[in-house]
Length: 162
Image 1 (cartoon, rainbow, N blue to C red):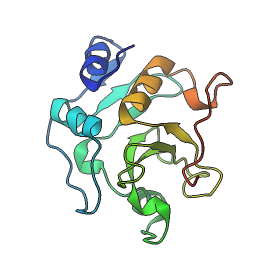
Image 2: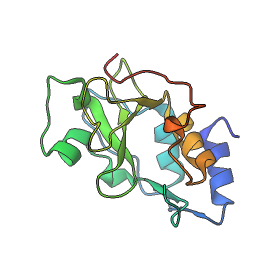
Image 3: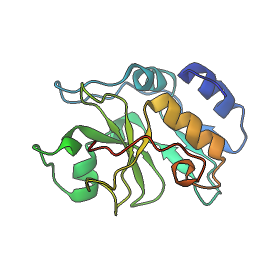
């Protein structure tokens, strides 16, 4: 599979079971945070996408205007003192199924399982990818069949609070 955003998007665009939205703009975020280069490139090429819409595990990489703090979306308020204050929703699979991306300097680009029962719970926030590109590759390769980070063959990366 592809190893950069451009190559990944070529594969996804060619897949009739996926939809890639036209580009809009690069998201605006708080000044002390940083968009990872691969996510910035992604939003310069498209305005989000939908993977395997009619599958059990369909995911949407959200449009740039919906890139908002995970705590606000999931918990209803920000918790400035918590590590999760730098996490933003990057993918969604239904109303309470999310993946967050870390925009902090120290952990920039790491992606976490932010499903309702796991978000901001120490020991329950699995790192599902070290980069946005790896997240997109993992979701695409899953073909909507199952969450790739819950499969037995997935090599655990750690927890967001490690």
